[in-house]
Length: 251
Image 1 (tube, helix red, strand yellow):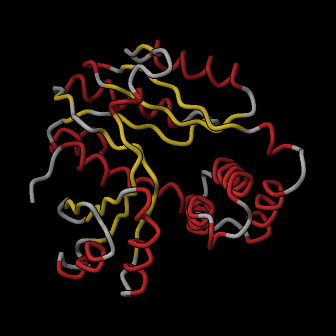
Image 2: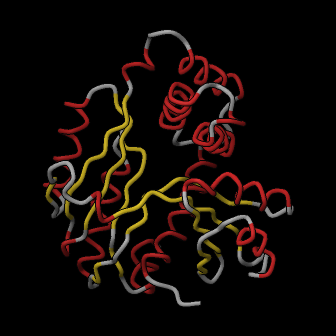
C-alpha cells in the first residue's frame, strides 16, 4: 500500500505518544481528558467510548489508579472544577498554507486563546476565525497496530467489524473507522488478541497540501510549540510531505 507523508507523520505521532506516555509527562493533560469525558458521558467507560480512551491513555502513562478515579469523580461530581473545563477548537494556517486544527481543554479561554495565537504568530502561522479550516477535517477513529507483529490478514477482523481503511508505514498499521464504528472495531481487534499501540478519535484531513522540506521544518516547529502548551490536547494538520523529510525532522 502507498504511504503518504501524512500517514508517515501519523505513525511518528503514534510512536511519540507512546514514548511521551512512558515518560509520564502528560499526567495533567490526561487527568483533564478523563474528567471531561466523565462529565460529558458519565463515569462508566463501557458506555462512554471517550472515557474508555482517556482511561487507556492514562494507564499507558502509568498514572496511578487513585488519580484516574479522582479524575472520574471530579467529572461526575456536582459543580466544581469540571464545569469550568471546556473543549475549544482553534483554527489557523501554518507555513505552506497548511490548515491547522488545535483541540484544547481549558478552564480559561482568554489565556488559552492568547497562548495559541502567540504560538501561531511566532512560528510562521496565522490564527483564523472559527469555521475557517474545520470543514477540511473529519473526525474519525484511528487505531495503531505494530506491523512487525501482525499481518494485513490479521487485521481483517477490523474490516469485518466496520473499519473504513487500513494504511501501513514500514512498521505501523493505521486502522481508520467512522465514529459510530470505532468501539466495535477496537473491540474486534482486542477480541482477536491483537495488541493495540494506540487508539484515538482524531480529526483527519479530507485533502492534503504538498509542502517542501523548509516548510515541513517550520510546520513541525509550530506543531511542537502548540503541543507543548498545557491546555492543548491535540494538533492536526492537512499537509503532505516526503516521508524521508519527516523522518529527518522527527529524528
